[in-house]
Image 1 (cartoon, rainbow, N blue to C red):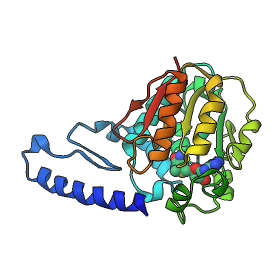
Image 2: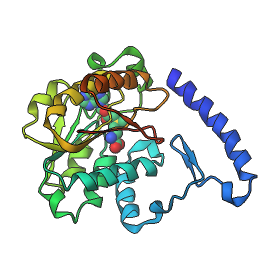
Image 3: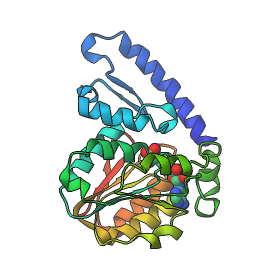
Length: 252
Ligand SMILES: C[S@@+](CC[C@H](N)C(=O)[O-])C[C@H]1O[C@@H](n2cnc3c(N)ncnc32)[C@H](O)[C@@H]1O
């Protein structure tokens, strides 16, 4: 409920700004006004045909509640492209219907480096686990997720490099069998499994590899943010606060 009220408040507030901006000279008009991000900066990456194709394939999975999240996808794809050049596999903790994973698989379809990697996708495929989330995290997402495993299995059947791992993190982490990770995307909307995953994969992440946090700077995700601020302190690293709401860690 709190998260909903926050979102409603900011949407209203920013709607006011949007109106103000629309009356300003063209130079100051908003070029992007969605997914919590409002900017007058140039967004022509959205029109790039390779990006557009990957984005459309991702959106067709029915992810993101029908919302548009191009800038978050752009960041995920850019990082994936860099990580494909490193040693190690790809991991996503919190895959749901496979939006971001599909964007990455489509965008990097012609990268020989990427084709040789395994892409591990962890999820309950039925929403947050009551056992591993706080009462407010669990209640905030009630009704958002349903059992999607059969659909997801069918969707990823054409990608032999994808390994779906069904069940609740941290319990399923033992099913991870590899030695190096180049890129990990953490997106579970709750702090306990996100930190368990971050701690588990940290020793596997290669130097220069990326850990992308989907919810880090979202106002309503204070529990995750606090947990990752402590994670960063413990590992003596800095998190990059991205205006999309994402947070980024690069392994030293
Ligand atoms: C925001 S969605 C992920 C969105 C996805 N990355 C995309 O691109 O569309 C969050 C996902 O985390 C999963 N999840 C939450 N807690 C989990 C846990 N303890 N273990 C495994 N998956 C979990 C939920 O089932 C849900 O599918």
